[in-house]
Length: 257
Image 1 (cartoon, rainbow, N blue to C red):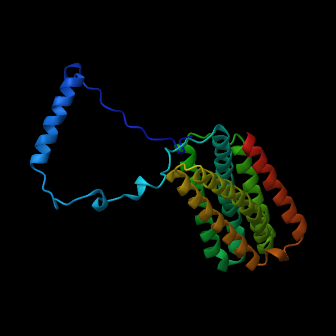
Image 2 (image 1 turned 90 degrees about the horizontal axis):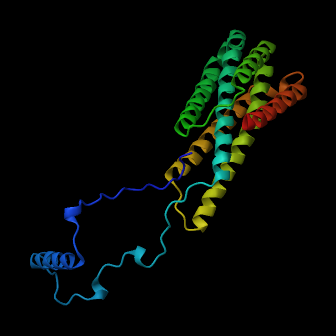
Image 3 (image 1 turned 45 degrees about the horizontal axis):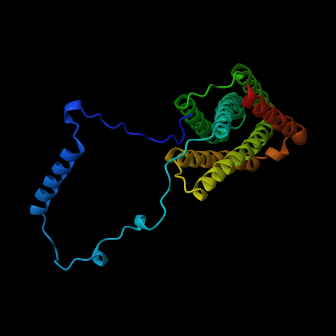
């Protein structure tokens, strides 16, 4: 992955004729300094070290060069982003399958279903871009997750509003906890880098910000589900328990395959 790799600028190589001997270099430097001093305007002849600017960086330890991620950190991010992309794919398919039967019976839910789908589609696009940028392969279970998500969405949509919302509550409960764990892990990395005086790369900062935003939107969906009688589904405990177990299993498999 390309996270936090230090940027380097190649120095141009001087042609052989342009290289100077030590003596020639000293003479050239003295000539340049003399010419520079001839055109310099002094503000005060009484200038002293006490009146010179004192940049804070002169006395404050500065961060060292940016350090690349360790092999373990790269592996963690590979797994996390692969699972996240698969999960967002499943979410878009669940809402796609749920919406027709649900909105036919409850037309007032159309704006809410569209809103949640649009957010999930945005999350999916974000993780697609991250996988492509960092050359992370998607899970090999892609076809199976596509079929399972579509069946789950259609089944719970056909069962009615309460069952569809219970499905959303179960899925978003697991996904919210999953994203929380990832955010905590990335924040721990950043705190460790700062303790060591290392620079925290902008890509990592942006990733944490995106993960927090996506997590909050997923938890918003959970709130919508509860407000729309998710807990009135019958059988609520069995339905949500099966779905949550399935989510945990899908996460575990997608991390490894």
